[in-house]
View 1: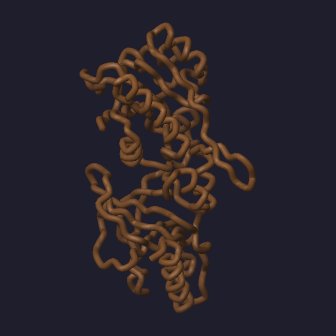
View 2: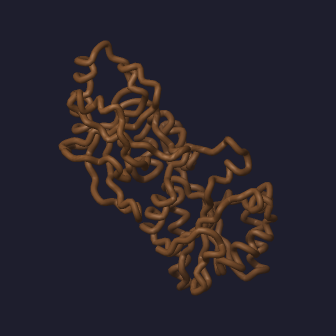
View 3: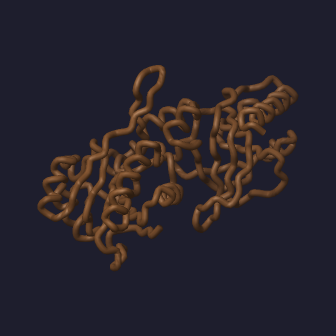
Length: 319
């Protein structure tokens, strides 16, 4: 998949495209349905499917300090959309100047002049331009003027005991924040992953017989609620972000209250692994929460709980 940042870097040989626009944070099942419609349209038209996304999140520019927790890094987003059949991804810097573009200017400058849209596929709730003044109806009118078609795709839902739930990044963030990784995975279509670099920690786990990979993630990463989880650790290619290997893991999120810790960390104990991961770029995938974070009376009680956590991780993962 071709990928670039900024309109000026758009390849000159791109030709006319089928464009889908959005943050696509999480690339969840709803996004997959929308992207699938864009890919299908592109194949029918014999055009490349181009995904236009933004960095940083528009909320941080529109309302500084309101940056939402991020479900997927740009590298992970690129990997996921490429798997869905997207041919190109343009990352557009979201600035205050860009925020002030009128809907018509956005359409002409971004979609027509630079991305050469022959068709645009967006969600039915899509808005664009200054103060979100544009919507699917206005985009359709502008498409008639500038020579592209528009398709608005209905939002995806999921049935539960509480009724129909609209699958959205906001809903998934709430699941992650509550530690409900099963519901998050159902909406995502895969386990939630955070990414980061393995750094040196207190090395206390090694002393207890459970050496862990201490994963330091970028700001705004959507880290699950404090607790112990069954999941896996994925070693990534530092250049491309592609998966190199995967190992089952028991994962701790929290401040290590037994030792009066104050710094919140994500630490993964890899089952049946012996090696050094310092400096590796990794992903930590959360399958199921096993228990809340607990302060134990003494070290033997903590080690007994860790023994049980590992056994539960094997059970949950079917190992």
